[in-house]
Picture 1: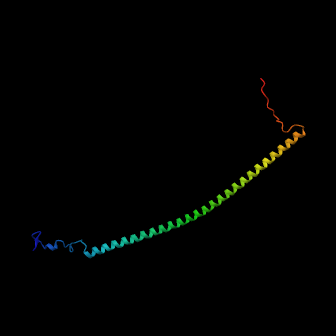
Picture 2: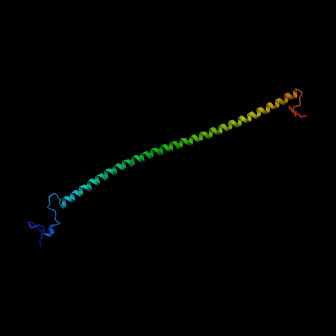
Picture 3: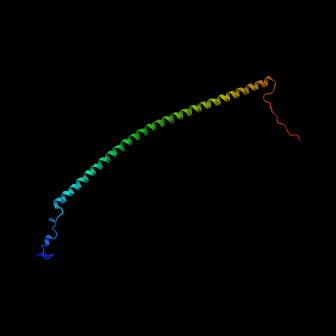
Length: 137
């Protein structure tokens, strides 16, 4: 049975969906080839992006290794500096302690000499040189 779209051109209903012979419409083979080219282009683009990502990752790994190495170097320097600071502090404490002992020894010696001078002058070394004065008013 033929459907008549216009009186001049009778059309078979199965031909209504068949557009293969229309001008400018791709054939199924052309459509598949076009889709294949699109997939190939996408695949190439993804491969290029993957390669760039790998290069960036490699650079980041190198940067991390360099930073880790520098960190270890600085950590070693810090440990050495802390050790030197502790040694310097210990030496300073030793010097201060020795200096204090020497000052105390000299003060004691001066006190002994002052006592001997008072004895030689005929003074009582144990007498208070500044007696307390009472207020008699």
